[in-house]
Length: 291
Image 1 (cartoon, rainbow, N blue to C red):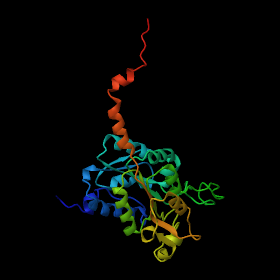
Image 2 (cartoon, rainbow, N blue to C red):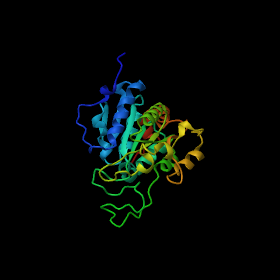
Image 3 (spheres, helix red, strand yellow):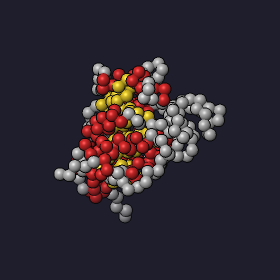
Image 4 (cartoon, helix red, strand yellow):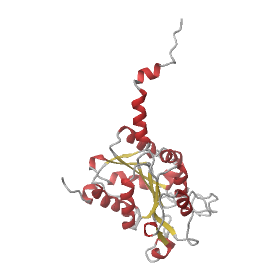
């Protein structure tokens, strides 16, 4: 068997993000992680919606879909149901996933579809030049909120937990070691796995997480859950951790919650087998003869 390397997962497309964007670090970590997972390259698919993060499939030498705004979970669900042997990944941003796509994200999580979601959270709309997003802090001053945003921000971890996700984690874009470990665990998880990746937008929201994510202070202001006695099967503890924010608390990183429950794609296949012939099902009990 040929041993794959990062280079095997790099496409021939020129990477076009702003210089210094956190997306570069996420892309590099993903390309370094995939060879060790042992998944045939032809069985890996990346699905995206719209936004900076949505260019991710172009830069991966795998199969991929660049779909419409917020609908990546829908496309990924259909793909996983029809081709359950595939490893299906969603690359999405906070605007794509938690604004127009929030409805779709909610349902892919509650159904526990066996897909892996990389949620790039930079707390801003970067592609459309710096409007406040669903995760921007209250009072955020942007082009669309010159007097400060009046919206309460969405907490992606709490959203995922209460929607029913069976794998919920958080990482920092430039913390490659922790990000690689969490991506590996998500790939091995059976069910809907979502990783919130705090990603710096150095053009429109530079330093959004610097007070705790910067390398100089990270060890003091971040709590790595794998280094503690955190029980990842404890939902209540996970929800409590999802509320922890700096400076009141150290910011949790790693896997907050993981549970084993039947996946939607597995139960879908089982139910389809019991349904019988489609023509018989459509005509059963609802056919009238007009005389």
